[in-house]
Image (cartoon, rainbow, N blue to C red):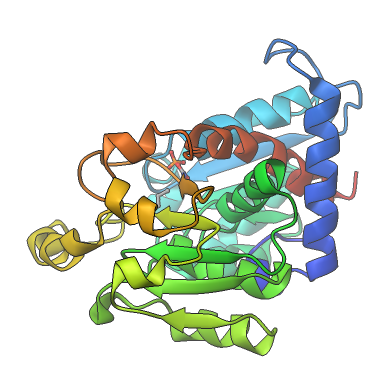
Length: 308
Ligand code: CP
Ligand code: NVA
């Protein structure tokens, strides 16, 4: 029984093994209809609970479809409709869920909610995004990069904009998969210093460059995300947009990167804000492959957690 809580908490060789399995499973499915069961019914007889305290399209659908393809059953629960949202403790919720289901994924606000759930659950817990990180997303992102460009080790990734939860997981991945990461954005939105320290301890080069055009020089991959995350107060919108406008990923910025630099965004994108249509829909954008690979990467994560 293993939890998938964060990339820096999972051994690097296990992360690599998960991606290898994801690629094998994706290849084995080919382009069969989405409802076709996998030949290996790895989750047969198992039930998965998916808890959402924040909105979701990709995470919700990819976990649900993935578990079903592997023969599992799913329950999608919204935090507000559970007793969890009405005063029952996380610890008690963990103990109760552990009696009913075999594995749980949670998307929540505070990281402590995830950690408390994992501490008191006797079943695997998967992090489907907190205010602090989004590890499943970056597993899909690394898989997507490697599908298009080969090994990510030694490559240069540039994160543009807000040093948020997704950026923190990218920094963890830099340490675990051995690539370099340059952050470009306003100082007040710098990434979590602990994530930077982790990447550096593992030998990755992490740079901070305020000038976006200079930052993307030599980039193999340019990544951005929304300027206002689900945990950010709406009242911060104006201030953040003003700070982040110089960091829009547009064609001029992409032209300053390597000619074959890929563009990624975890989605949902706010077109014409953090990224232009030209880049989103351009030849170097792999955003929909990234979205698809959530399915394949997470199926491998579920199997790793369950040991099946
Ligand atoms: N990228 C991602 O996690 O998308 P959703 O918020 O739609 O799940
Ligand atoms: N940083 C975004 C990612 C959404 C998938 C958020 O937390 O809202």
